[in-house]
Length: 183
Image (cartoon, rainbow, N blue to C red; front, side, top):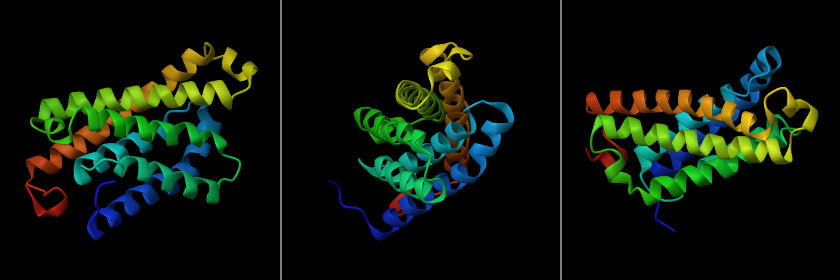
C-alpha cells in the first residue's frame, strides 16, 4: 500500500464527498425524469479522472469509490446499485496502474484518450454489474438487456471521461501543480 500524504488523503476525501453527495442528491432526480443512468457516470468518472491525475498513486480511486459508496448509502440506503460503481472505481484504478500514471499524462491528447478509454471501460463494467445483479429483467428489456444497460452507462462514462479530461488538461495548461507541488 502506498504512503499517502495528508494532502493526498484530503484530496481523496474531498473527491469522494463530491461524488457521493452529488450522486445521491441529483442522480435519482435525473433518473426519475429521463430514465437514463447517465448522470451517475458523468459525476463519478469525471471525479475519478481528476483523482488519478492529482494523486497518481495506486488505490486512490479505489478509496474514492469506497468512501463515495459509504456516503451514498448514508443519504440513500436503498441505492445498492452504487456497488457497481464501487467495482468500477477499482477497475479504473487497476487500468490506470497498469498504464503507469505518468505515461497517462505525458501529452494532452494522450491524457484525453487514456481517461476516456478508462472511463468508458469502467462505466461499462458498472452497467454490467448493475444490470446483472440489481435490475429487474422487465426494466432491462426496454433498454436492450444487460448489454444495452452497460452501453447506457458507457455513455455516461464517455461524458464523464470527457469532462475529467478537459478539466485535467485545462489545469495542466494553466500550470496547476499535481499533488506534492511537482509540475
